[in-house]
Image (cartoon, rainbow, N blue to C red):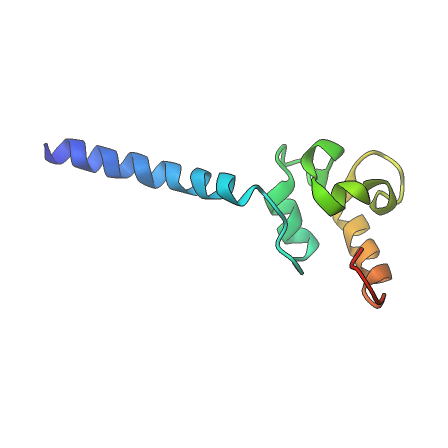
Length: 93
């Protein structure tokens, strides 16, 4: 009985982070930097974001953020986009 409880608790501890991430929907945290955004959204872990990996406002602005037009948003492109738009008034881009 004790082994079953330990096994069950181990299984729960392994699954809990996945369930939490699924509930959050892999949304970037407002105000998060490129490293945080990449860590949360880069599902294939190639160091950049494709159109399939982004949603919402980032997807709407994908072609603008993807400055070199290679179909991937790099950490550098995210930084440059944020820097260029940080002093704008009105809705965030």
